[in-house]
Image (cartoon, rainbow, N blue to C red; front, side):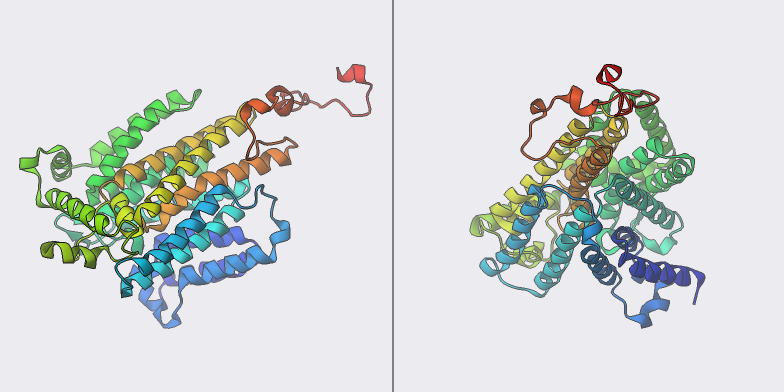
Length: 466
């Protein structure tokens, strides 16, 4: 057995055991397994005789650890958030639409199993990652995973390229070239904030992760990712937090220079087709338009949805030459497969995620955590914008990373609330307005919070305190 296989299986087994006591270890391992995905590596076949379902086993261990240590978790209020209620409604709709839509197919059962697992893990995620250090570990694990995927792309053999584009790298959700480029593009803001906030060694790690991620994006030549990056760059310029704009502008400038130095003529030739006029569109771009028009006809016949995993076989009944075609849009896929109610629920989940980011900034306003929280919110907002805009022309509705990004604002808000509570500061709960709180007495009730060297002892006279 190779050293790679030995190290991975040791890490995996230890993580499964430790997750029974500390569920956050299971969350981190789950994320790493998602990116590494041993089944597709050159050393993964050595572990095949074990017949392990890596994601399922670590998720079960994490769930057991969460239940067994429920009394140790910080209190979150409300225990069930609006985001979680919307997730339950979305999962119920996903199970319902095959019954009222085009029928139940083999791929439907596979996708139902996957989405049920995703939403169960989301519940664990938003109830385990409720401390600031846990949230930082989650982001760091994502950065390390991006470094691994980027390095794998850098060392990929020639056989991994199809029509000049890198393909077949990474986990099952992003093995296709366009999906790989988007996944790495959405990770760049998380890498950037790690570079700005963390210590020396995490900065070094983030630097190399950003370099390899950029190279992976360029090798995959995903046009959807480029659309998302442009939207993300606009967001980065106009939503940069005060006090850090100079550093952020410098980081963006260096990133653009470094990224441009890695590109070649083939990359830019493909990117130019994004803005090509109708008469100059390539076959792929023209095919998307035809697919979307046909998808609208399907939706007219099935306004409540045709069912998860049935788009490709159903579109062939409307246009024989489109049989087996992907929707090439997360929003078209949501509307056609999950119905108008699914599209509304997806929109509500996106709005809820951005609302949580806004609440995080309000909670941290005026506290010693404000600068760090502003940067974390800034990174998550850009990542979501990249993913959402790229999803206009790419189907990412059933990708786990997409749902993780939607859930991370809730993790950040709960982590921030518990951090403020640990410091003895009340926090803004659901149903409270920012205007209802006396921020001067809430955030600065004693000299310590204002930066005083020593607190005033409680047993001193009131005049001394004053």
